[in-house]
Amino acid sequence: MPSYRIDRISEEVRHALDALIRGLNDPRIDGTWSITRVEVTRDLRYAKTYVSILEDDLADGFMKALKNASGFLRRELGRQVDLRYTPELLFERDRNIEYGIHISQVLNSLKPSEESTDETISE
Image (cartoon, rainbow, N blue to C red; front, side, top):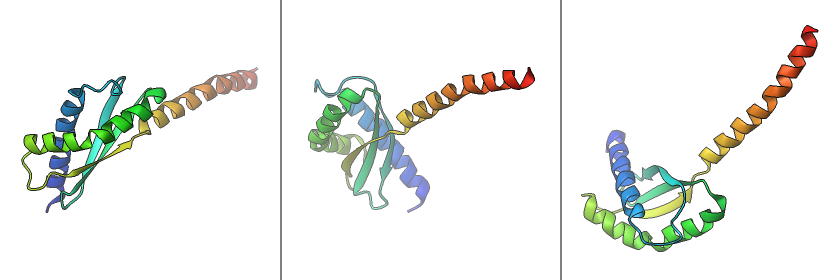
């Protein structure tokens, strides 16, 4: 199976899951979150879903709610996306955005010290 087909299926699953999760009536699913990517295996049996959650205090409850609702989400995904097999959903927290924010803060903290050293050299 060509890899571009898997990429298209992964993107379609991502869009469908995003809409389904936003429609859940679980109070633990709250705050600022997004599905950053979905990786569907070549045999279409598993879909690893990476979720980015910006509030750390809500993250544990959010991930538990997703794992509890995975059966419902899989059934609804099977109704929306026409595939031979509906993949089993595996949810994982994506920390790339948090890491990028941390790196940005570190770089910004270094910037004032570099300016002060440049001023002392020029004097």
